Length: 217
Image (cartoon, rainbow, N blue to C red; front, side, top):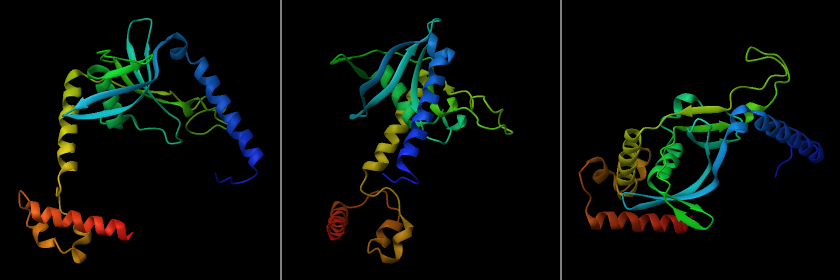
């Protein structure tokens, strides 16, 4: 760990910042009224014969019956709301909650829940402004911590198709020409010909050469 200044002083600043964020989290009305159904919940889901695993930060239920899936973020950069609809990680969590399994008390169960909201919870929004700027007044929190989006079943089907398309590209031996290395690549002619398929022998030679390069490094 690199400390920019005095270690003890920086730890005090980190602790003060953490307490400030947690105090804001506890006092936020959405959090006080919600019931956490699952927290730090492992999941597994199959897409196209491939298993995806991970951990969902939280699934909560509000008094009106609406269920929200939350992915907590503590980075300094606030996510842009426009990116939420195509956020692959958030889409995977939502897909897993609806079509996959989660682990509860050591048992794998299938919740089959379509969350009303799939959201990012930006924890640093609870930080208190130290001075007045064009973005807000001193003493106020830095903004709304909840960045919400809605995912329909059609959206999840689209995500599944998109993921299958990505898998096809990622798992092919040759999926697109990388022209950055053309000057030193002995397979340039075959690659740039853009043939629909590459012979097994040629792909084998390429993979063998890649292994040699990896060992050399």
